[in-house]
Length: 157
Image (cartoon, rainbow, N blue to C red):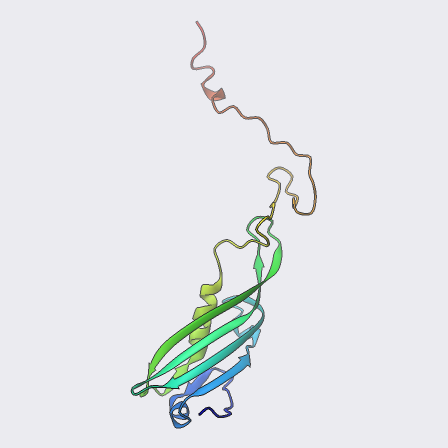
């Protein structure tokens, strides 16, 4: 059912080629430089499956790899593995199926708002700024009395 096919570098597949082959399955290593605006990728692989339906082409994809992330607590950089899947229908009458666009969207959604290098990351010291995962600092938080500002308002007369 599926044949060897030269995968376009720009990930823009010709619909007629897919229909003529009655579908396609392929896998490729992504060029990380092409996606530097979405994520700082270390390595990523894209697996694709094109299925020809009566009036549409179903594209299912899976992107796996590693990316660089910055920890929200200690600000350290670390490699984080990821795996994202997507599926989309394209009309048979479309001239081109642009997988690059879908891949960019999928990678852009992969980034989390808060990244942690480990669940038990201790973060940075609020007083001296040292990374508490690497150094034990002797900083003590000041003892604050939230009612100190009211002291003069209710003085004894």
